[in-house]
Amino acid sequence: MKQTARIISTYSADVFGVCSALYELGGMTVMHDASGCNGTYSTHDEPRWYDMESMVYISALTEMEAVMGDDEKLVNDIAAAAADLHPRFIAIAGTPIPAMTGFDFEGAAALIEQRTGIPAFGFATTGMNTYVRGASMALEAWARRFVRRDPQGGTGVARSWDTEGPAANILGVTPIDFSTNGTDASLRRFVEKAGFCVGSVWAMGSDPREMEKAGEAKVNLVVSAAGLGAAAALREMFGTPYVICFPCGEKMQNAAAARLQEAAQKSTVSVCRSSLSGGKEGDVPPVAVIGEGVTSLGIASAIEMETGLRTSVLCATECGSGILRDTDAVTPDEDDIIPQLKGRSVIIADPLYRPICPAEAKFISLPSEAFSGRMFRSEIPDLVPDLGYITEKL
Image (cartoon, rainbow, N blue to C red; front, side, top):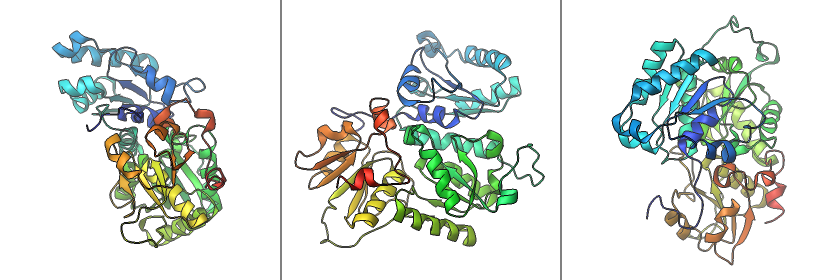
């Protein structure tokens, strides 16, 4: 049965992806759902919750309001809260109940913006897609609304690339994919080593005013599928080239650095990945990496470069077209992924995938905040500087 998980867990939902992407940007994000349903996000999917304040709320939708369609109450409540809190923007994100009742998120956002004078977004998320879709939607919408060229530096924020050379933005950095284990800092160091200064990181650790200058960067690095929407928007708005790659391990970093330099010089869009030949037609690559498409592709490619073992990605979330290789597969449901695990020698995945893996295969645990929440948070590694966490177990 599609979209049914009998054994394994499910990925963080699209509405949580919206919340995570916008968490540090000074806005007020409202999940339109019953009271208490934001507890899953705050306790399992958001490691910043107890250390960093953010205006993430629930609308406390009641059964009567859902049935009778009392949208005016929601608009009034949000407008009243915004008058007290003064957010930079307002975002409303959907869940299964408003999806079933046909709630007009864009219309409500327009009404709220008209009433408050504060920029507002409406995201018709349903809770039936993964966090990747929600985060990508949110970052793209933010880019289209707030990123502007301003050669005079009108935001009052010093831009490091004025004196330090060409800049690169890093897109798709949220703790749902990378937790708070230092990966964001490692990605910054990689970009600097590749010959660029870091313009902004979307959206961890960057001032929103820095992000508003993202259109002045020379190139963008997309490290997860959550950054694909923003990358496409910035390409459309400013012509900014981008490279899709999660640069983990020394050899993959060297390849990614060269690809970034090429993209900046020739204004190209590309995917940095490996694709080993070998094996007979139809042979199953011995190593499978399960997870989000872009990060899993980076890990799989790095393994091929470091060890010579053939790999394939089993992508369990949404992923853009043309990113995965012929040996990879999109496996969003439990019934899709189980047949793909047959014949594998090594499976690299979140620990909650272990029950559906063949007993004879070696299982390498790679926890994901998106899949198992906080259960294995302390075990999530930073793979950017060193792939030894995986290669030493192969």
